[in-house]
Amino acid sequence: MNNTTYSVKKDEIVRKWYIIDAEGKPLGRVATEAARLLRGKHKPTFTPNLDVGDHVIIINCGKVILTGDKINQKVYRHHSGYIGGMKEISAKDMLKNNPERAMTLAITGMLPHNSLGRQMAKKLRVYAGSEHENQAQKPEVWEF
View 1 (cartoon, one colour):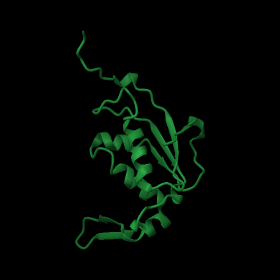
View 2 (tube, helix red, strand yellow):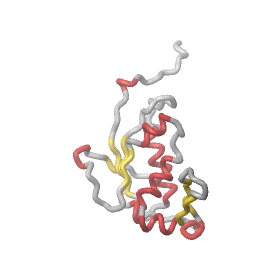
View 3 (cartoon, rainbow, N blue to C red):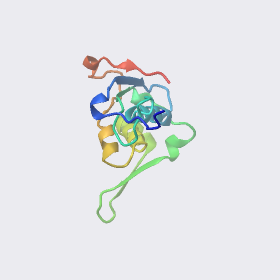
View 4 (cartoon, rainbow, N blue to C red):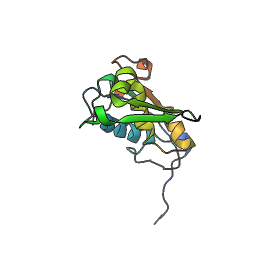
C-alpha cells in the first residue's frame, strides 16, 4: 500500500476558462466563488503551494449588490505613503464609478498575500458590463 500524497507537477496542470455573471448577486458571494476557482480548490488535484487554478471572467459587476447597509457604511481606504495621504471612498461611490476595482479588491483579498497570490490574480478579468473580449478562449458558464 502506497501512503504518499500525490502532488501535481507543473506540466500536468490543465487550465480552463470560466465566466461568472454577477448580476443581482452579492459582491462577497461572487468574490468567494471566483477566489475558489482562481486558487484551484474545486479540483481534485489542488496543491496549496502551486498555482493550479483556472482563468475567471466576471461580467456585469456593475450590477452587483451589497447586503444590509454596507452600501452606506462600507469605506475603501488606501494610503499614498506620504504624511496625511489616507484616501477614502465610500462603497456607493466605488460601485458607481469603478465597480471593477471593488470586485478585484474583494477577490484579491481572498487570495494568498504573497507571490503565489499575485500570480493567481493575473488570471482574473473583470468587466462592468455584459461584454467581454475573451470569446476566443471559449469560457464555460460557472453556476453557483
